[in-house]
Image 1 (cartoon, helix red, strand yellow):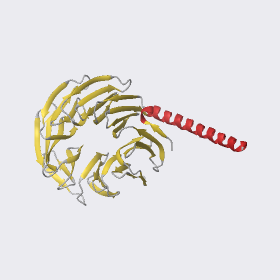
Image 2 (spheres, rainbow, N blue to C red):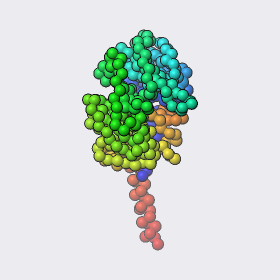
Image 3 (cartoon, rainbow, N blue to C red):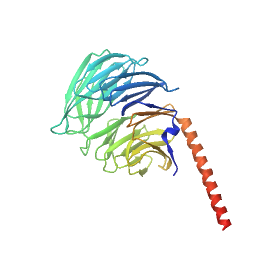
Image 4 (tube, one colour):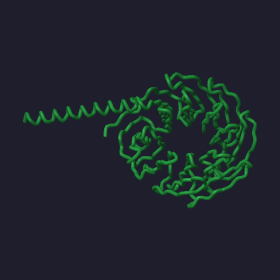
Length: 352
């Protein structure tokens, strides 16, 4: 199958300077954070840089609300959206991880890694108000790999030793919910009716109205997932993609990230080559292959815009309409070339 280069489909390409760790599309701006602690905001319409800021890296997670809130190194920062000015900073200790913002509060997690045991041994969950005041601090043993707000509760998908997930209610009580199999959570996503949790043993647990359904994959850690109220798609470390539309595809490369764009599943895979496979959402058939010169780290899609980042720090902005027009043009050129090559072959045979 004919492959296409990612930058040929791009509306603009920018350089963040080091590996991109966070990427978010907010209205008409694109915000990226790097391993080295650089945050940059670009205008999506023309690609010009609006502002940039540097903090102690790496940047772990970003949420946008009334301000840009981000965790980086051992700190929580609040940044003005329009001009990038740093409004306040709070020390959160340990290694900052996840952040989740609701109307009045900011939840962050900070974990402690012990070199002697080569594992995370303690996590602190902190709640701040939007003026940087610490409201609550809770310590527990496991590191969370997923955090979401569901009604009045905070949900945390956790690793060993307990595994499963934690519910932190409005009274700050922690309820541990077990999941059969006792496999650590590797990631999760929120859906309309609950959330999906990926496990290190290759299973997925769907939590819907607090009821659990377990789905088996390929006994390889889940590395990426997307989902809505009636659809989900998973990718694992060995390159298997499984869809709730009853199809499975083996790419034989680790699936780093997935997005859904215009009834196609975009799957970024890494091995000897760095590729994005564009798969039919209904049956998994490969429609296009897009190649890149570096490992794809993150992909985001909203309102017809696609943002992609790579390990070298490139930030690529695509526009859905332009991408599919260019893919069609390239396909047509390829088909015309194949016809010309076939005609030349027949003419050569006639001359013999």
